Structures are given as structure tokens and as C-alpha cells.
Length: 144
Image (tube, rainbow, N blue to C red):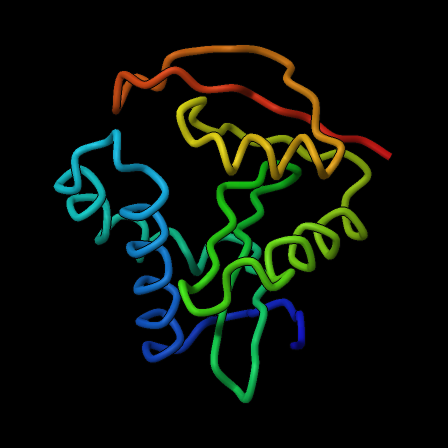
């Protein structure tokens, strides 16, 4: 597995990123209506090239990515076939190497993600409600 920054993703790479993004959201957030995620696809696809993208690849295929906006992690997504193989941890470690502080928002109901971030030394900073989905979420922070 290789981790690198993806500058100016091609249409094919955007297709790969979006497939991983949609599958990850559908699998990780069964408490949010699937239609919500499908409606977000055009906006997310347009936003990805404006985000610092750290991608994990194997044999020139993207198997996961992390979107970084300043010190804010917009999301970590790993292909179904690559989950539980250290891809998310490798992406998060790459982001930690680049930023002295990181923060993110995670749905409280996404227990596996909350546990992953706790295990990665993130601490709950605040609890809010995501206005778009009406779901409670944690703002979590990490610093060196």
C-alpha cells in the first residue's frame, strides 16, 4: 500500500473516489436515509478537487482516501474490500504527520468510527446535532 497526496484528480480517479465515498457512507451510516447520500454526490464530486486528498493505493487502484481542509478531516473512506487492513490508520497517520492539530465531526451512532478515532488518540471536544441529517455528532480533536 502506498499513501500519497492526489493533486488534480482525473475523471477516472474521481469516479473511484466517489464509489468509495458513497459505499462508505451507505455502509457506515444506516441511520441516515440512503437518498440523502445519493443527493450529495454532485456537490461532493465538485468539492473533492478543492480538498487536500491523501489516497491509499494498491496496484494503481485507489483503496481509500482522506479529505483534509486545513486541519479539518472532512472524511476518511476505505473501499469495502480493504477495510480492517490498516488503510484508515495509515491515512490518518499521514495526516498527523502533516498537521500538528486535527479535528473532525463523527456521528455518535457510527460507533466503529468513534472507537477508531478514540483509539487514534482523538478526544471528544463537543457534541452537536448535524443540521442536515438531524443526527447527534461529536467534534473530536487530536494534537501532537
